[in-house]
Amino acid sequence: MTSPQLFFAALAALAVGAGLVVVLSRNVIHAAVFLAFALLAVAGLFLLLLADFLALLQVFIYAGAVTILVVFALMLTRQSGGTTTLDNPQKPWAALAAILFLIVALLGIYGTPWPAPPAELQRVPYTTLGQSLFTTWAVPFEVVSLVLLVALIGAIVIARAEPRER
Image (cartoon, rainbow, N blue to C red; front, side):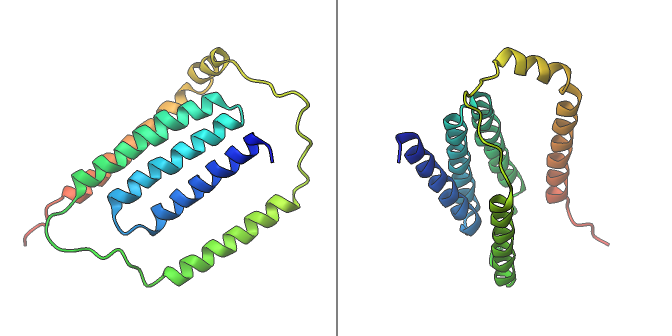
């Protein structure tokens, strides 16, 4: 096993392990911290695959901004008083659905005739990516950012709404 393959396996194991902690954690703040670890491990995988731009976006947007957004949303919508249980009686059904999804995904991966990798890897310059992002994909990018902003504002309004007295 070569050293890039060893790094890839280690980062993949870190990403999967942190993802499992996110899903299985009973503390939401711990889940947010491990979400950042999982996203940083994915950024490392992007670096190993020579996708520098995706690794940069992964760190800035997902590991940075989205994790901070989750923590801020938790702080803003945290209701005082009362304890909330995070346990759900549908855990066995969720585990069964996850296992079935894994089986279908693995069948799809191993059943697909993948093309041979190119002999020489080619990097796309940042200037080409930036030009494409700010010309061709500018409007969809802004629409997605507005949808995310509306969703966050809606969550805050719903969480902060005072019950009406009749």
